[in-house]
Image (tube, rainbow, N blue to C red; front, top):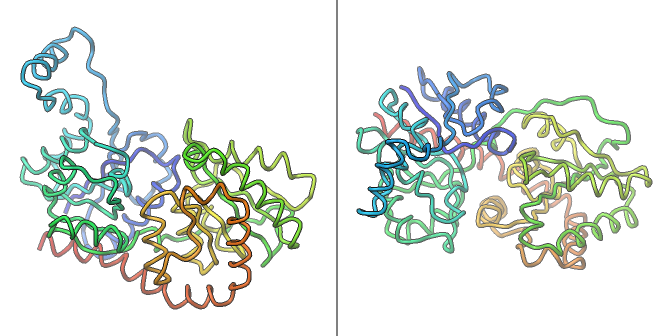
Length: 386
């Protein structure tokens, strides 16, 4: 059984890395003889992934101006309003591998949260035209993200695996009968525990992850996070470990966290984790924290899966849905509008500290169930090809 993962833009996003790592592991564990290949937009960043059987350059290619392909694309688009030929050429680095595969897994968990995706739609059509199985793996999609065109694309899939209940219920309400509920594979990912940095307090360190993605959506949130740091330093004796999780150009957590570090390092209670660690190494640090505050979904998954009480600076349906499936409510998840409110952030942090033991007890009951739901994804995948 040959499986190709696509719609992955490289492992500088440690969440994307976590999805590939964990998904490859559970697929190979449960589907004997399965070979997993990865088509990546940035293949040079994925050499750290040892369990995949091959990494392809899946980056889009440009069509050279005035070439035969360019002229044919122009005619098709301008005269027939048909972009299929052009998109096929642009995404040929993925399309050319379809014939050798049995299953194609679209793995970008929230790719469908960011407007129309004509490139992915075209690849999906070509997968189905060649009689291959098409699966949307561990997705989150909000009601606000849906469109007629997107719904028509989703109908093409042989199987859609929603990673939380809110997405599952929304897709079912749209009349899609190819949807199953699972959990994000990253809940099952292993961890690697490196030596603790100077200043880390065993059992008394709070992790803080913040991202430019959230800051750009709500610019005042940067000030609110600064006020939260000040509050933690004033009212507790905890060390704060600033924890990056995405290091992409123009979307680099480390750059924004470094500014906080420079501002507060004089306190001796703020440390900045390095930017070069991989997903399992970040998980190793997060697992040894007392609390975690995070904007990146897979950083919060690393915390939840190690029973660390977590406050989520959420910006989409996935944060709310994952928390709801763990706690039965959207526990300690702040929406994009709320995170510019310093008092709200501080009050939620104080709530987390007050309820520390109760939250840990809930996680210890819920996380084994959530991990079983991660494995359900592979069961559904296996049933598809039986």
